[in-house]
Image (cartoon, rainbow, N blue to C red):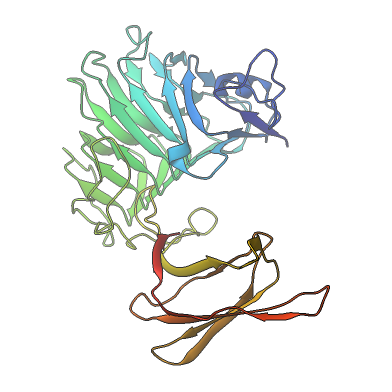
Length: 367
């Protein structure tokens, strides 16, 4: 199992798929990949001019930074799956590989102004999974539909048929722009779909199923139809996005700390619980930082002590780094602090006591 790197500035002709010499396109990396490989997308915007059927490869495609904002995929040409007029970006239509295909921490934009070959399609389904022995997994992604009125084709973001799908901590917006029907998640025949920690906003239909939908801890707002009875931990309040085309939510969002931990999938979060949706609101920390110098030069290894003046309690000690810098975090924003610096020159044994700093107020910083 290998790691294959891609970058918008890479090359499909001279690249070798290494981190220092990546390929340019994800579809080309898929062609080079073997069963079980991971395709790692370096930051940037990808113009994907071809789609693929990956039925004989069990793959993971993910952002190198684990941040959906850093990797944006725009589809320009769809793949004809050969099944009932379905055109996709990635499909698993038949094949023999069992296991899971996983896509993580990526923004996916389906833009009707970019797609060139939609006219022959009956259905446009960016992720179309029909291999009964394979599982489709999406974690931490942002899926958005734009400029779809001219395409006017029945559209589904993800279709799970006769197999299992897992969609966690993702955000889906604007699947409502066509006179043909648009659905976000479709589980059909004996397909089973788990949906948790997801935001669905401004979509015609969220779920369609003659299979099984297991749903909870999601947010639904301004959708034409949800399609199922939602779980007791799901909410129907405005998620409070920071803009019309973003997945970022405001600090006052009801989605904050409203999700659930999903072992193996959603485990890292800020606050008391995961936020619903792909965007995790950064924790706010309060810190004191500074630099120690001696005769204008940074001092490494100086001992720095922090004391809370308001409570006269010891906070902690640290030492300066090679640039003379120090930092204390997780401080109380409503209190003031006293910093004491001591330094002994290791060569001469000379001791220095820098001037103490009083009445320091911590500075706010997002983690």
